[in-house]
Image 1: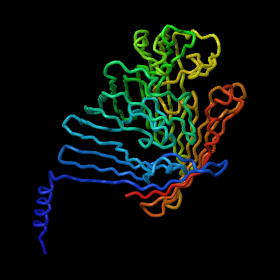
Image 2 (image 1 turned 30 degrees about the vertical axis):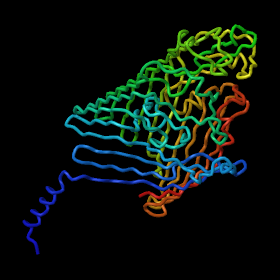
Image 3 (image 1 turned 180 degrees about the horizontal axis):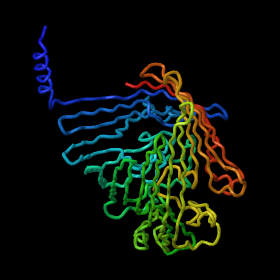
Length: 481
């Protein structure tokens, strides 16, 4: 038998030999997903990640991190008539970046997903990574897109300073003309209708975080072009000198927006209070000279004479905030509650010289609908702002059978503009149960009911009313490795 001294010597020899050796780690999951409508049991054909793989390779102070996913979508009955390929998935390189650890912090370069803010979900500060609207009802990084960027994190005692730079304009993934997707955008413009961004469309983010015994406080700054497009103005074209058959060319763009945010996490015994608030200053930088340099996006070979230009020159300031409360209730029930609010502080734009409803080959719209203030949409902020300006969100979770069974109940209540009825005009109610078949294999069954008042002041354009048909039940079998 080996002596204790020899065992100790061999142990430290093993440590010395292993020191500096590369370390490889990997994990991932296989996900089988099914979702169908409550109304007629038809399948909701949306893409989902059927396979995900994360690989980390570390050598001394350098780490290479990568995340790859296969996104699957069921083929339609007629797909093989136009495309004979049996492939029904797309590979998505979600993250691939190099991370360098130093004595003062770390440096990251590549495609990565960023997370800012203190609230778990719906934080108006968490805007660095764009949203993937196909994954609206997912959580955390699963509903985000990676961006090519460089990030620095500097640690100084209890203070952390961060800097993020991306030379690319990054936008949300917004489904266009997808009947199965519940959230519809006001319009689906073509690529030719967009105004090109000026210069390098860089994005810059800064943050400062300070930790205390009771929690932490953070300050955030961001500057970039909007994630969602906006109506930038219109041009009127004619065929040569003839203006009798004019065409109105609607032009879209992306506003330049600055964000200043503040957030905090307070730990008070078994209670956690999180809060984030952000002020956005947004401006459309397109002017008359930019509009005058454009060609018509509608049959430019015919409508080749620009007659009038009407850039809107939008400017807006808006604020969003989220307050989150976490507490453990009796019977080991975990409660999470949120309050979200969004308000436009001021808005200005030039007017469009249109007095009558328009009906031309490429445009059919009423004067009221074309009022820029009525169709203003924030290009940054919380994802829930596309549904409502004020919401109350409640989540309850209970674990049973030694954590083998997890039951959760969550709800979103629209509490904005309810004066007309005195009740909640819309809500999303979800129930989900997850059973751990083995340590690595889980089965989840969920139910979601969406309700929207058809008598809402927005009528049939009320988003939760539009989404009612998306009420569904779903099942998910996930194997993790």
